[in-house]
Image: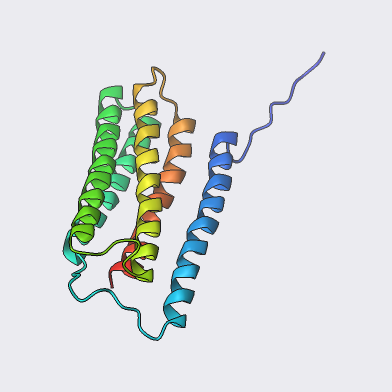
Length: 185
């Protein structure tokens, strides 16, 4: 009589792979932030051109949009774990996608306003650092919204895929308040 022992993994492979990817992304954003701080400290004057007013409040609103998206993702994962109706789960996911795309659009709008008021990558070293960091983050949010849209339209939405996505989204949402504080103040 042969018995097969089924191993139970502490963490699923997709979730583990996402953790590895997020670790790499943490290194990426750490490098960007470190270079920002080193350049800022090394310069006697860290000048934003006088005509430029950083959109602190609109960017704060955008930060709240992103944080709200994380709440809806948490609710979607919880609903899936509790066996709620797929319509409820997909409703939460649709809100996450919408809020992620709203963040991207509004961040692009704020960037265009700053360019129109004179802050460009070529204006100052601050402008170069600002657009590099904000642009990289905004692309991550866009990538996340597109990925979640693929999960949303998947016929069989499973908890492992959603948890793996949640690891990525929590990183993208969680790093933004730090980047916001670093760049807008």
